[in-house]
Image 1: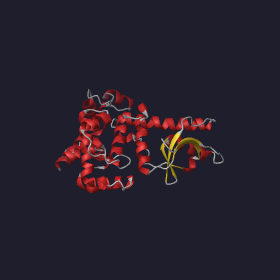
Image 2: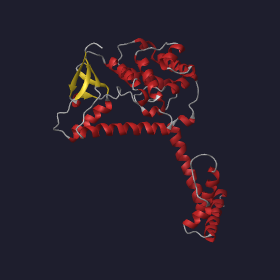
Image 3: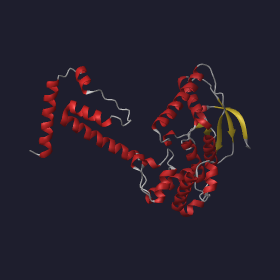
Image 4: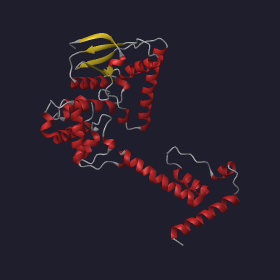
Length: 313
């Protein structure tokens, strides 16, 4: 790449722009995989900082783009953050970070390169993150009319997923209208404009957007096709329903008492593969000092109360 050279830079002079950070583990649908990815990144951050604190150095150079005399990190967010954390502990240090500095670039070029760098990290990045990075790049470059075959090759995905990408791109192109071809609109303004117009046209919840405010491919594709958002995929609905179910369970616990509630719950979840284990009634009573008479009286009393409340006597 022209205007590119290796140099040592002061971490405090570098800009960590959130739009340049292409990593986005929240895109990972599977809860365990998402938590594992987040934990892995946290451990990597700690390992880099520990190396610096023990006299080590950043071994792999970061990549920095100079845009209007400002230095944007396009690859090496975690390494730069570790350097800043080190300097916070040792403010007197003259620590520098090795970088490939690319001069005379635009913000759009920096943004696109950041997405490309994310795709090149291999096994360290999930497929969902890579796909969203490619999608962001297509939006910023206004590549709205690629064929399904082109998208299959670009995303290395099934024809079905390529169809979803094509629909999402069409949705973006349609709401942008004439602005879809206006390359003078900067990246951030384009993303904000796109979100505002998509929200005005489609029923998209908070979970339909990535951390940069760019629409998630499948959510937008489904909205474009007129499909209702699956309840199990909508985080806002999940929170609402969880709170409602918790309230219902607490009501039943109050109405029927500990013993009946536990035994009903134990039988309900048995064999369902939910990973919920409830000890048998007799063992629980023994551990908690309950006698059969005490338990019977409690359950009978609570049951009678629930019947009176239910029928309004």
